Image (cartoon, rainbow, N blue to C red):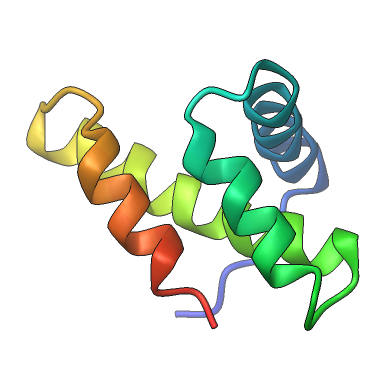
Length: 80
């Protein structure tokens, strides 16, 4: 199934990434952005981080779990 992009939702998720960066919480978000911007432009790097964030939100809601910073960090570290 092909899903159509939802621009409003995308902006909301990117805002969460920006908030993580501003608050440096979790710190792995900023470290990941710094690492990815050596290879990609900032917009693309933030979108990559946002894709991991969406995966985490989905996992949390589907499995009724709390945010797991270690799992999130591992997924961010896997971004190439």
